[in-house]
Length: 93
Image (cartoon, rainbow, N blue to C red; front, side):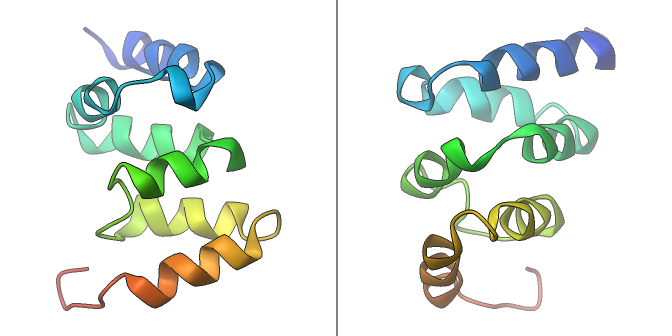
């Protein structure tokens, strides 16, 4: 599957209500390559914040996740602060 098709799959997945999406669907897509992962976090909106946090997708915050948190911080500042206070900081993250 090429990158354009993968991006379309992510767009379709993100158009759904997060409650209807299984974590395995997201994991399978974002594990294909770094570009797909970056696209997912770039396109995800604030509706996905709680779901991503509850499902463990924000347990290790690297560049795509950090960019996502910065993007939604204006709309969900309290949740972002709560997440940042809980996520451990390490050299690899």
